[in-house]
Image (cartoon, rainbow, N blue to C red; front, side):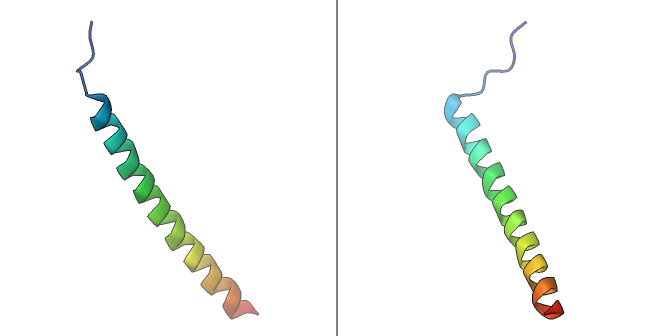
Length: 41
């Protein structure tokens, strides 16, 4: 049983896209947290 063959380059590209998406989400969350805490002060 062989898995569908995906080129190594495709795999790296997919991973990069996912990482970028995660990074963008983290930045959004950080901004939201910053806004919350700066309002409290």
